[in-house]
Image (cartoon, rainbow, N blue to C red; front, side, top):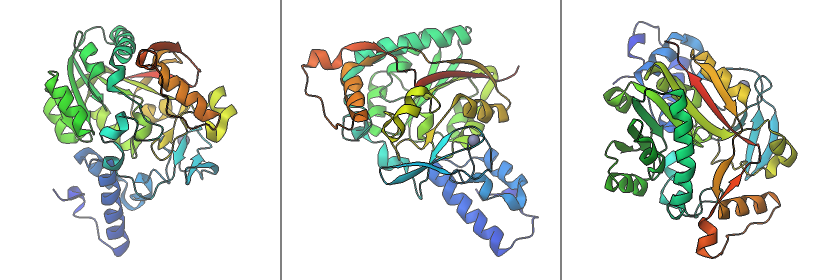
Length: 335
Ligand SMILES: [Zn+2]
């Protein structure tokens, strides 16, 4: 399908052609190209390209200059003066390079040490998350999880919802299919998937939104396929928290380029507010977390890189943890 097909009457120019090529590359890098976003970009006419580059435009929609806040792992992180969100400046980001099975097995620094081995603890945590979500979406319906990993959340959620998911890591998707989650698809979210299975009554992103490059465009696409009165549940770090401010570049969630965004409550409220959604919940809840993850993140904030070699029973044990630097937010679409 030609990009900007409904712009055929617009006079062309070298600059416009360049803009289209850049946009196309950007959209492919972000993992999808949707008709909805094509049309939206088209309507912006000459201001097309800058308005779609997350290195230049904040997720909140601000065009303000963002000064460099810190540098880590060879990447600059800039901060938006209007909403406080951080953005890792990346020339090129291909999710497929980062989110393979190794992301869940300790081969990627800053990622999970042994996701599958922590199933019991994770499912306990996800059960609480489902109970919470069910209070915001008591009628159930269709639920979509972006980045569903091995399907542990969906297994809990299917007691209340008709569940769907997308996941980048092939091995995790195979695991989901073998476990009976047949609607899980490998890859980034696509408009084709949303059109075939949507609209959804609940869309869930658990510690995922900070990984999405063109996050405002992705959010726009998701909102298009969210039912009236539907909700989006997001968990992510809070860069405006005291813990994040005190620890700076050593913050446990400051892991560029894996984390491309560092959100604040204001930034997410603005981003979803721009799309017509209302913020209906904000909290910094306690979580049940694998002990080894708490330990390795705590040590990394002290500058110590260590791969725990603890007795298996201790590694996988879940402990309640709260550093008040991670938030849970719910956004609701009007009726
Ligand atoms: Zn901003």
